[in-house]
Image (cartoon, rainbow, N blue to C red; front, side, top):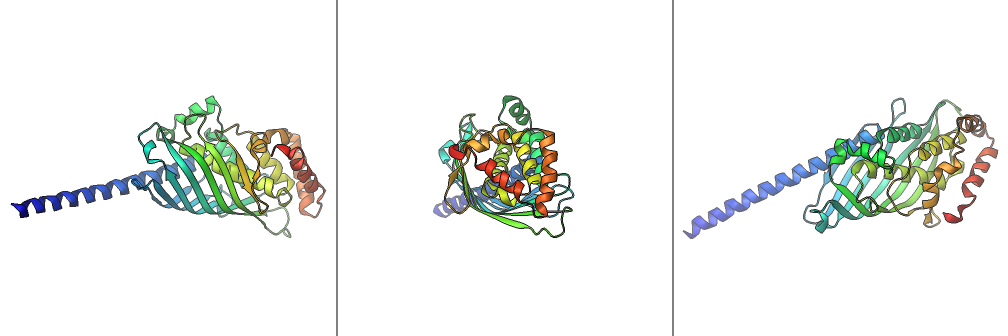
Length: 309
């Protein structure tokens, strides 16, 4: 009798182990699909993930090898990520929104590529606006909520941290003598994502990551970015509206600097007109050929009134 009980116990344990394994694999697959779908629909470019490991019982999850492709006609990737970590409050898993104590991404490579008419960043920001994921207003939010991605769980994130960001800035078709430049950002942090509106979905989080990285690059090294690219990116950011997040800081090597106000008010520094953008094209081409006057003016414009930043 005792042998029979032992065998039953063993069989039950084996079944439980198999079921637990299937659940983990199934959840990992769902999470991977949600990330790739959110990236592709929000940014308008193919997005892939190497692997996702959801820690159901530990609350510690990992993302490996995220790749966001460039738009058509732009070579390579827009953004690649080596490692991502998500630490979840397990007690929130049964609630309406999942509470994330920290989401961190380490080892990010980004490419800014300017062509004659636009840049890859312009195209991606335009795609974000079109998807409705870049705005926190009620109309855009309702449109986003109609998408399948928004039908899933929402997240409230205490802190989003992005570290070791390397940005390659290059110009195609304007000057053959211009060499790519590199901007390095040690850390970007975004606080309190989704806290005001009861959570942010995966598409909105993806949008916040991209926008915070792009804006930090603009603040970290405006002199490295041609005026034509700078005008276009600022215009793209200003058209996206407000997202649900708290403080934003970045560290380009001199310690963390708060840029929340300039992030929210990016539209006030763009000029907001087609004439400004067209004028920026001419000045940008001049800057590529060695005229630094406009770059110096851009620096002054960005630094002016920075007491709030």
